[in-house]
Length: 128
Image (tube, rainbow, N blue to C red; front, side):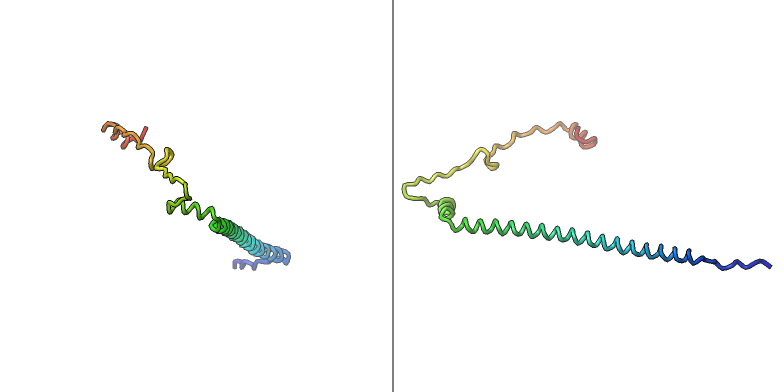
């Protein structure tokens, strides 16, 4: 009669070590997930701080512009530029174009198209 395989006999020390390993593993997973979540929250806080800083810069710019709009210089500039008004004995001069104006720049010289055989060669083999 064949002998029955015996039950697995575990030493209490082995059971204790296995339980400790399981708990350490669970602790590591929990800790790592908290660390990851904390890092994500820090990144989000940094993003919102940047947004607040940009909004504050926009507010500062708008306040500066608002103060400028209240000045006489702004009114005079708008009257000259938009309405064409001027002070008595002032001669108005309108500049028609500038050399650096992209709308006034010279048109590029027409380019001679490449011969057909070169166009086909470029299509098949790419530009050289």
